[in-house]
Picture 1: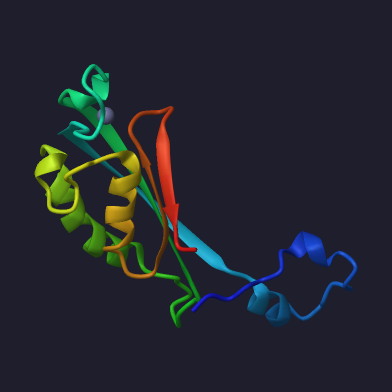
Picture 2: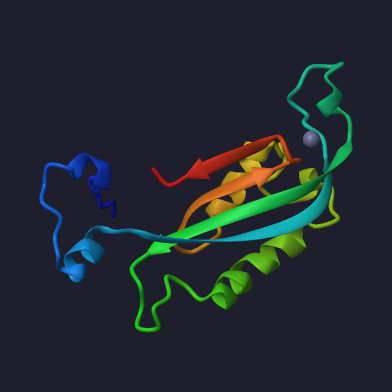
Length: 141
Ligand SMILES: [Zn+2]
């Protein structure tokens, strides 16, 4: 289910509510956590001569964002619960040839981000960095 929330900056003509719970009911809370892994890959669909067709490695960084209502503890999700879901996934890809991992036969950053997104409960978006300068992000529409 998708809830459309009008951004606050579009509501400037509406008098601000003094009721904190009213504001809170319009808000979305997101939390994020960063993970790292080191892997090799090659991109088999690229033409001969493209350097990324050759096996090479990256120090990947994965930023995971989870959103939702606060629970009774005041959490969207306990970071330990996020770890419990994601660390097994990190173990599947760390120090591997990513092309050998099921679902990552063509391991572009875009496809790696999607692979994580599809396996994490409540995940709103995943951004995968191949290095400091290049990243791909996938979000729930
Ligand atoms: Zn690469």
